[in-house]
Image 1 (cartoon, rainbow, N blue to C red):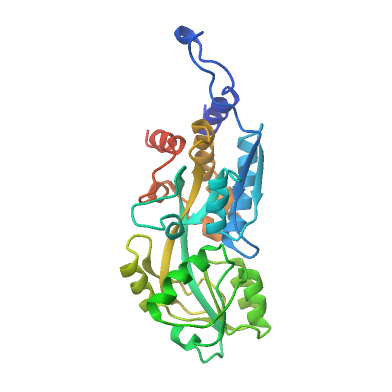
Image 2: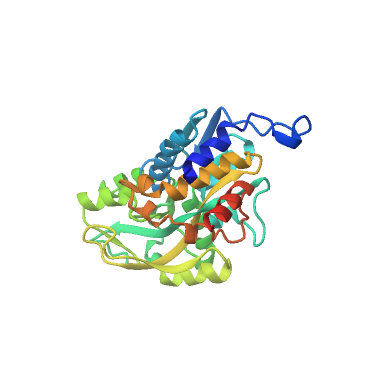
Length: 312
């Protein structure tokens, strides 16, 4: 029996009672949930695209469960939904999860690390903005209020002393506003390539502003989640490579989600990665080797069981 079939067998039998010598004294296994909500991201975001693809794959592996991909502002709203029990699974950047060194939101653990997000500063190709400091006093998109972008920008700006006019917009709305001349630039912490930027670059010439100094400042001020990185030249049409900062993204689960369910979720993420990646290039980075590297966020018991079995 292959691993996927075995996970289904575990779940389909989860409402039974252990047999054999333990019959009559073992408690029933945890039931399969009727509904499983995966909190994702806004229009134009990689979180939204990959979350929807993952939910579709999970629906096949959890036939007794209604799996729902629910759009959100992204990381911070996803964490709030998980804490409130409004979602059982959610995507979040590591910096938003670890708001303080060594601490994580209670009641949550990791299914696995998926891929990294990169902080983009997008401006028109002909703009005079050559550095973050050039945005002083200008109108800049900074993500929705409960997004990972807004969280990271709130950390970054005090380190620079920079002030500008903040516009709370999703990636898609920020891209449209930039094309219309209503923004001087926008910041977004997102996977690469992100759909909103790809579509914008196909319509109008754009440029990415280097954020190498800002990457070092964030890494020094908040050790752990921030790593200097480069957005490759092949990411967006006619856009050269750009130094910036990267942050790992995790798939999180509530601790009270039954371990057999999370084991199946983990199996789906890492064995159906090619299906999830269809049309979503960033999902091609999902793999077992990096998936277990969730940093200070411990694995859910079900995820830990899957990773142990994957090593056999």
